[in-house]
Image (cartoon, rainbow, N blue to C red):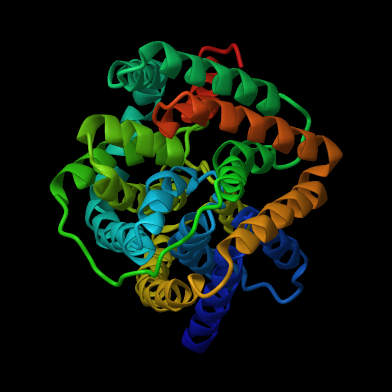
Length: 395
């Protein structure tokens, strides 16, 4: 059994490398494929499939920051990293940006293991109570986002405009609606401006900066459990909420985002055990395969998270260094154009023609919002406002 589990971990890590490095490719797609194999498997042993999915998702969480920062090509979990990460890339600090996110994920491994026993005790009784407070917490986050801007009217416009767009898109009968929505707002809009402004990427440095770890850890620990156990909330909302608490700078925010992404992913598996609900696509896949998770299976999955997380950290470090070394030797404008074309093709394949139209609309919306010169995090209104309306029964 040990050999089979180690093999499943290895295959999961390989799949996570693939999904993490290919722009626009989401782990939910691979998770769905694994589920189809697992449910048709005549030999049984569903635990091996679950182990592979967990290892894949953890590896993906680490490596997904590489295309987000180096190519400006995010998904819903890393969309915010393309903002400060891309700025650091232009300063020759792309490797440092990736490693700040990876360090956040790495710290998340041990925080997850440390607080899991406490969460197992407290989450079931307080789940319904916390659920009722979420919309008011998110309204508070939006108010804080606006109040911290110098151009408050412009920030309000960005939040409302992106929020309206998100509301329309998420209520549209479309497969993977977040792919064109977030790729347009945060990815292709930045890529087009990069091409338009003829941005040159300088030679990358391999330095690291000291940051205040306490504030982002505190912010993430407050926000991540809420978003890991409740419906309609994901890593991006958790990061915005955590940053509202922590008020971090750009580098600390990347650490917070890595930590938050990891904890939300980890808590989504824990939510299957505590409240029998999966809060991410891969957690739902694990629940579909295993059904109810017992203590023995939960312990095994936590061990898988530990092993795959440590391996993924060193993989991220190695791959980020290779890419940082080579990126200024290649015409970055061609990379940006290639990535833009790849995003368009993936959107057409996954979300169809209407998804491609949404990508175009989201891209021009993103360019307009960027032109207003407010923080791009305000465009997270595309998820915050629909989530608030969802909790009020209006979405």
